Image (cartoon, rainbow, N blue to C red; front, top):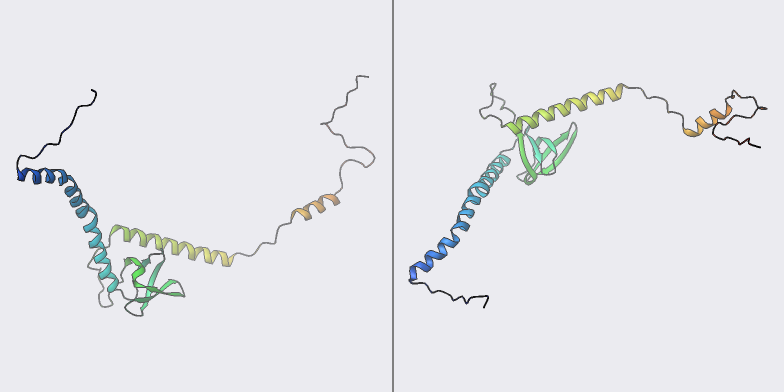
Length: 187
């Protein structure tokens, strides 16, 4: 016979059955613990920090919405809405729940020194990039407004009509030579 018969073994004692199940599930319990401490708990802490920061928003704060719009808060309308300036002179009403990041907070009016809490590296990088983009767009807008418009270029039809009116070098009574066509003069 190719296969041997297998019989289920019964546990010798009642306590070892529980112990065997615990040993089987121990890796799953450890994986769940690792997931909790490395993924779930830090995410909950970040969400809690964002919630408190969004509750403390005030005029002048720079934010990023869930849609990726970078704006500066111009006024707080209610507990659920704010008015933010997206571009100079362009204001939009934004729900607080759509705010994903707070880039910077302005200094309080009474303090002349540096802020007590240091900015993180990503906030500094984003703020630097925003300032570069603002400077570049301002420079482009002033350069575009100072440029004069060039006259439109001639189209293909105008160029073809101009080519027909130009005189050619070959006289009208002499046919033009075509090098690509060769005649056979063997006769």
